[in-house]
Image 1 (cartoon, rainbow, N blue to C red):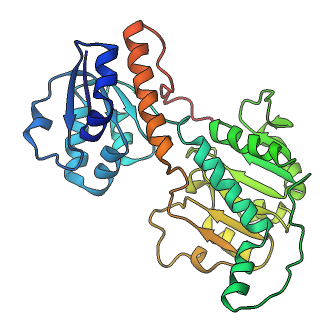
Image 2: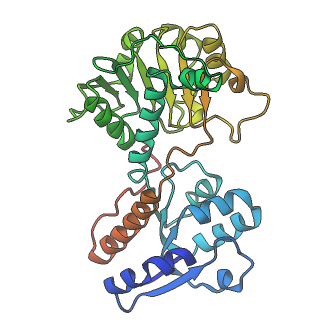
Image 3: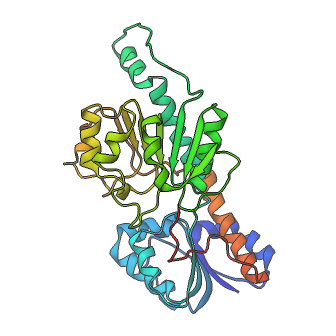
Length: 329
């Protein structure tokens, strides 16, 4: 078996890979230097671990994008280090015939769920207001309902991330509803419903978490009409794709207090344009698509690749194999 990995992963995991198969040929590349002759001389190979270093480099450098795409055409299997498949390099790889590609959708659920609850608690416990008071040396208790017990948490997009959010929600004593295209009973949610049942829940929702992929079904689902139906004390948190939200409608809803707050880790265009109304919208917290970042997630991403290499060798199904026909959250 011949595999291609980054230099960093080679230094960290080479011995583990060789323990799996001592005859394995491991080719290590510098993701930031596609001008190296090594990129062009690699023959057809069994697998490429397209870790985040390759993916970020391809995003930022057209030459690396081109070289990585050329390299991908010589692979039988690619393990992506991203959960989503909307990065330009991955969209191009998906057009290659006779190749299998797996995403890392299970890898980042824990840190993303932690991000969701950092934002929920930040708002619920009025942390921003406490910081303002401290900076002005103002001592004053802050009133408000600083508890999550029995609050209604609705998760739109009930996949791996949604289930981790639900797990934390139940730990805080919340009422949890998952929304999914193909609902099924789940140990963490009180109920899992279909999308057409969401509208009736919106006026009752305290916290709405979006964990949706980008698809024709999900684009612009959060629009002015949708936001008007939400409880005006509700908080919206988006850790799915930014395409789900019409951003000017959200900014207007925040400024007119149709909803109380929003936390956005993703936006439709990234980086977010300076002209976006979201920057100055009332009670809108913006982060630069970094909720998934954690050292443990990098380890999990390699472990997924390692498991899939074992599965290939043993004739077992590949985990997280991407299906172009299925984009359910």
